[in-house]
Image (cartoon, rainbow, N blue to C red; front, top):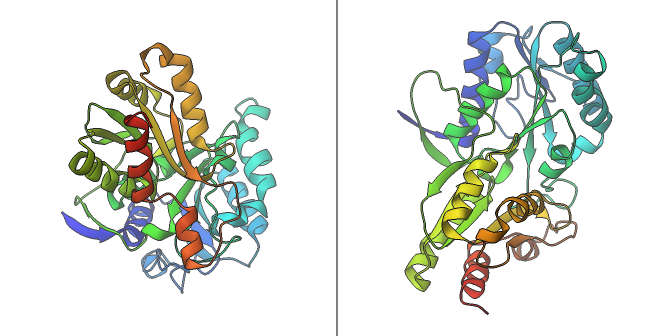
Length: 327
């Protein structure tokens, strides 16, 4: 058992899969010699060499085009898009090419690749470098969408993503790169489409993703200590496929649902979960489902404004306690 940072877990995860399968290659801007702009891929070039770990031009379209061609001809590429915001630059590949190729060729071609990208706010990078874009990829049929919140989940879910025969968008939260956690020795392989109950509770269910997971856990502790509210916390981990069974099972037990998401409020992933719960468990609810989100605004760069915009443990505690007390 070792304690790793989230960023070190990224390098370990990629190395694990590259050692296991020679078809796995890695490409992106400054990912080789520099070890990535977030220093999450240090050591990969030294171990696997420039044939399998490649720096690319500053062109998101070129990166994903090369990755798609490699995937269609027998490799299993991992491609980095430095900031998730830049998915907008190469969105034709993400929306039209990756997810539709197997369907449109009647299964003759598949695109087994992973696009890993630095996602989310909290590090003062401003409106064009701080977006949380899981909902961009979640809406597209044919993609799988992952967003881990801990180092051990980075390793296990990356392994599952690389081994999957479908294109996977792998969101790494920039504000979590320095977070440490215990990671077991040896090979770790998780399962896509499985949520985790990180804290059991009986009064309400709080569903969170990525950076919102530690904030939800902190809020749950305070809700118990300060308000006597026993909250269950679920880490969604994977939006597509979505583990509705775990979420619905928790809501059936608690009767109340709160989602905590960094996405802007309009069309966020929490809205989809609320819709599913309303369809499948409406008569088991003891009150309306509540979404705690970022406002529908470009994320500001100023420290105090960004902190106000993003959901915090304080805001979660305030909203959950107020709703649970009937205010």
